[in-house]
Image (cartoon, rainbow, N blue to C red; front, side, top):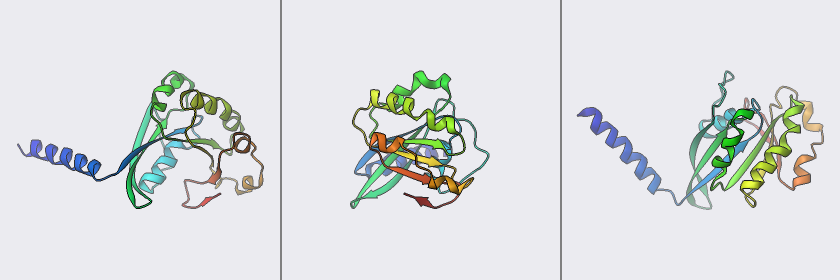
Length: 171
């Protein structure tokens, strides 16, 4: 009986928490395997970082309630698997997405070279959603921030250098 009441209490608190937000938005995080998508998600939603991350199988998600212009908004962020074997599943994760974060690892050139395929796949499913590009792992080589990455300007999307192992962000 105690467990049943506890489950109902948890279910009700999730339900009422959902009611207290004005809007729910879905964001997908895309990029090759091991670029730091899961760590980016964890840093943003929990303000934590674990260097021993596991590989995402299929997809994972987390949410965070944020304030946008005085309104409480639940941001649901989907972390997609970067391995090729999960490519056929990606379009399902894009369904009803409101935004996209493309991510690459500054220490692995191939992850930058694959951005075009990720971007095209996302645009095939979601023509008009806003998208940003994130260059992750700058803590390994901060000099990379002096390089000129042309992908973002060629697609006219915002570009950010980040290190999810630290708490700072540079535009």
